[in-house]
Length: 294
Image 1 (cartoon, helix red, strand yellow):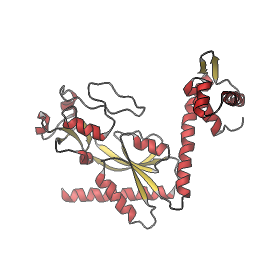
Image 2 (cartoon, one colour):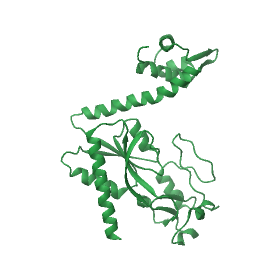
Image 3 (cartoon, one colour):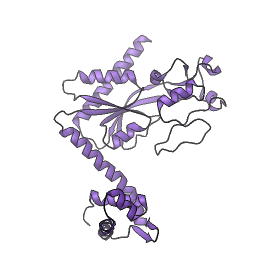
Image 4 (tube, helix red, strand yellow):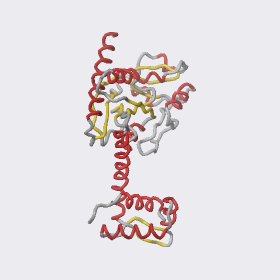
């Protein structure tokens, strides 16, 4: 069998998502007959039907189900490769570093300083995002490298280097009784009826069950805490998000949050490797400064 083409996979995925060849053709900006022919040709090349045709549309066959599971990541990888290749071929080459807005500020600043002083380091553009977006930026090629947290982020498909581990803190409303505590335990936060834990979206966009509010941005979360509607446990370095209406209380038995520098596992870029080395140097400087202050 000949290698499959990106165009064929895109056609197939669109039909599978729409469940109807006519709607898929409209979404692709083409007419239905050539799309139907392309799908039939793809089935001939694979040697198995991909769809069961019904009066209402199409349904995936077992072969189609397998191809759909493989085609999505393949198309995403192709798009990511194209974005990174365009950046690498630009007259003014730059790297993109993805970070959570408001998190790891000291480490980020140290990394930019160390890398900026490296005569062989490419300029870095910082791409800020919300929770889980760093992984998406790496996977779709919008970023080359990212600062992420082992406790929270999906690191599948990435190589990583640990930078530092730190205690986690609970951000609680200043007016709440827990704000007067010098420390908390995970059990203290497990059942606080008037302060249910906020629920972040999973990687697939769904939310875990629970009474707490659904949040998807850190600004939204900060305001909900200030209003006395929720509590959140975050790495200590994320306290730059803290408002005057907040109090950060150490959670002594919470697992340590480990900040990592992550990059696509398939990357062989020496420029990315240089950023990783400089990130490790920057983390050592931040840790040394913190120990000196302590």
